[in-house]
Image 1 (cartoon, helix red, strand yellow):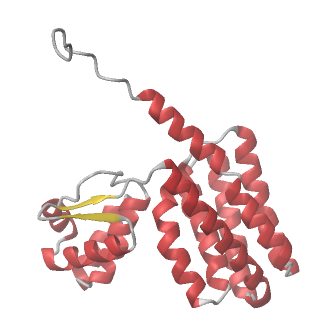
Image 2 (cartoon, one colour):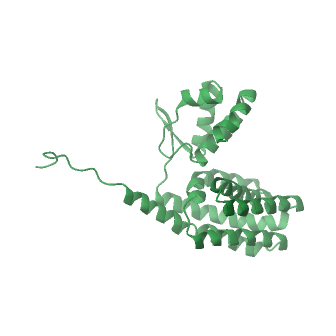
Image 3 (cartoon, one colour):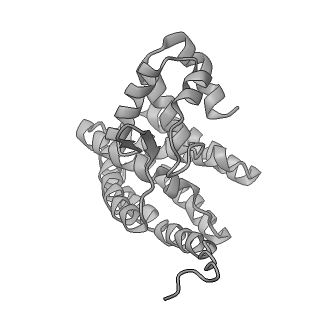
Length: 240
C-alpha cells in the first residue's frame, strides 16, 4: 500500500489540514513527489477526497518547513537542494542528534527503549529481506524516537525543521556492502549505549553515523551529474 492509499480514507473522514500535511510530507520524504516536481492540486484533491482549502494550508506549512517552494501565481514545487546545502544541513543535524543522544540516555523510559529495540530488530529484518522501503521507514523511526526521548522541545523543533529537508538524501542513498554492514552495526550500538545510559558514547556515535553517510550522498550526486549528457549542438546554430 503506497502513501497516497494509506492516507486517503483518513483524510476523507477528518478533513483536518494536519492530516493533509502529514500525508503530503510523506509523499515528499518517500520520493513519490520528486525534487523540482510541481504540486498538482487538482490531482491531489481528487485522490485525497478534499477541497483545495486544506491542501493549500498544507502547502503553506510545508513551504515554511522548507520542503516546498511557493511559486507566485503558479502553485508550488518540491525543493531540490544542492550538494553544498545538503552537506551543511547534515552537519547541523548531526550535532542535534548528538545532543539528543546524550539527553536521551538520561531521560529515556524502559517503554521507549523497548520500542527502539523492536524498531531496530524490524529494520535489520527488512534489510536482510531486501525490503528497503521498510528498512528506511524503521531507520527514521529509530532516529526520531531517540530525539523524542531527549524531551527537549526546542531541540526537537529545530531537528524536525531541518531533517525533513535532507530526509530523502540521507536515507535513500545507495550503499556498498561494507557501508550497509556499518549502518547495521551502528544501530545495534545505539541500542547498547541506550541500555547502558552512556550518553557521551551515543552522542559521538550518532555524529559519526551521520558523517559516514556523506561520501555515499556525494557519490550519488556525482553519478547523477555524470548521467546528464549535454545537449548536442544543432548544426548551423551557435556559431559566429
